[in-house]
Length: 387
Ligand SMILES: *Cc1c(COP(=O)(O)O)cnc(C)c1O
Image 1 (tube, rainbow, N blue to C red):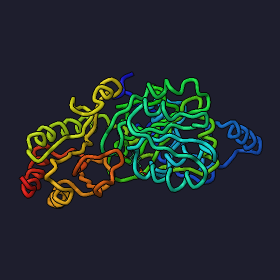
Image 2 (image 1 turned 180 degrees about the vertical axis):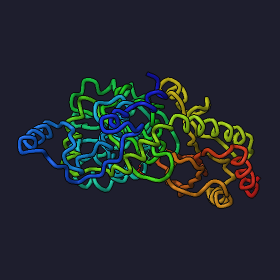
Image 3 (image 1 turned 90 degrees about the horizontal axis):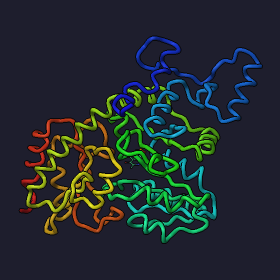
Image 4 (image 1 turned 180 degrees about the horizontal axis):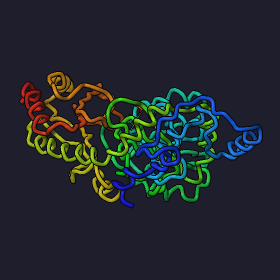
């Protein structure tokens, strides 16, 4: 089945058992009642064997199971676990996989708060976290016998630099001990499949395009056969759980994600065509553009793009000019996150983007508004920029 079909139909069997409703229902529960002590014993045994069973609310509900199954299907993994935020999902992978004495390689342009976990939490606990620039050649130079995890985000945050994930996976093929995890928030759902390309673990901030409406935070970790058992066991051990209401809302968002993302990316292209004509603009960072570094990798490994791009400016435009331009925007909100239906702009402190040595930059999330209105908004905001 093609992705668009999967997105509509996957995990709907969770509804059919109980009702004839189209959608799996919201089932709220802490306590689940067992018929008798024999049932209780058999459920305990199944849980010991890492089986997913509706036995206590914190261990998941039929509603959260439906979302897990849907994400497993689209990510082509064996098991998916849900977390209270994308960042908590990333933290879980680190906590479950790494122990003191291990070496962890992380790409330079990963999501900032993930970098902060490495620097402020893992390093002080004796885990050697090393950031690398570039791609697989740089990974090859840094691998050691004690390298337990290579952690990547493709494309990277804010600058969308691309890496050859199959080439990184090939480097690790003989290293029984080294796992490869990818933050797939940009490519979810369905634009990129890290597990099919050789990663062991794929992490998504469900908060972004899957939720799609700027109204919930959630994360997911999808594991392959090699990593599922430990990651699931540890998620239960550490009490990770999400509410069935949020899971329902995320599953609802997932159904329309391919339609929304197609529109986000079409609108982004229209806005880019205008931006390219502006004398103040230096470069537009957006993987589908042939001028984008690593564009060939995007073409080979991705099935599409979304509404997220960054604009860089000629040297005579300073970050302060760009910040004031952002303040003049009316349709674009000034806000963190992305993947909702609305347009957003975000600016960063000078020198505050790892892996970026260029000048002033603004990140735009192009929403579902009419691109002509978005361009008009940008036009009035650009008017105050130095020529
Ligand atoms: C937003 C984001 C996260 C974190 O998700 P939250 O739900 O906000 O914690 C992780 N990775 C990437 C690439 C993101 O953009």
